[in-house]
Length: 520
Image: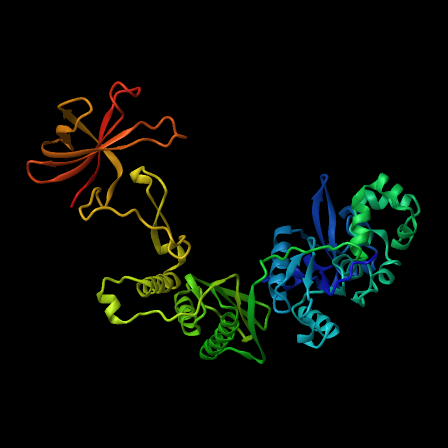
């Protein structure tokens, strides 16, 4: 039984990816006199062909052939060394370019991509027009492709790689797959060889055989691949990038290159998203603008905010700050043919009037208005300087003073954590030493406050002392001794924060004294 689905997938196969990369690079390899071009890599201490151009294929060469055998057949060969990392980088760049058709683009093997075009083909005049436009534009960039569209990824992949490509109508997967070889299911080489030894050369041969013996001999993976290709089971794809929650985009019949025009487009897209968010009662913390150039280059710019936003003017201002601060400015080249603004995730945002008048500021910057101003400042500084260069302190649930706070990027610090409140007189210094400094202490009684101490070779006579404030180590850290903190003031009026690390006759080891901070 076929699983009903309205999904449509476009499989893009790049059969000449290494060859295309060599011909379109900064230093293209163009064989003289149209000599065949082959790519080789070492395999089992022998150089073997990993990719061949169409001329080499017409002369009888095949991938996997030893280079010595290929030279025996064709003397004048242009040979290039394989660079799998460069091939993967080119495939990633093509995947970025394919984002203009759908944001749901997944890798599909070393030389293939899978696009989920469900519900978006009509934007390009239908599936046939979309496929033709994609192939035409890639070919103009020197990339040879073959594409197929079907209701399942497996069927689209099989028709693209082992068929003639084209469009498989919904429900027609079985008819399209039956004549294809069993290798079209993406099976391992040993499984394909085993099936062919049994006389099962096509998917139609496989479909007519009993399933239980096949599963017993070749495993459940064979039947799963068959059922997914035929639509009996769902085969989800994993996009390279998380799908955005909301998208607004503009396509231009003529390339757009003026900076002012680009800024106006971003403003319009921000307004479109603001309307969508307002209807849903939501805001967003991250916005990503994608600029698609006519030559296939793609540039993405992202901004993050500390609180959910949907105000178009604020979003436009943050993007302006980000664009002005780029070390590598956006180059429009021959112009942009599409600009997209996307939201990664949304958060609830109630529509309310926030008070930001001057009286609130003079009243100690208290309330939601003050928090909004601080958050807006962090947003602008982060857009200008970078997210990691604008930080804030966040309280931690611990009694250990030096661990009571941590520094996080201001836009990513969790909200709603209140610092512990104390009396009007500070019980602890506002700033601690990076590392507590050891001191020599003379105390009247072993566990009592210090009477005098020596710090940095200077002797201080204690006039007043308060404490102790006892802080025991966490129960899960058994090696941390108990601390007794004292606030002391010497005869010159200087105030110090000292602690004894350990208790006499209660904890192992000799207790030591440290100076942890100074009061102003």
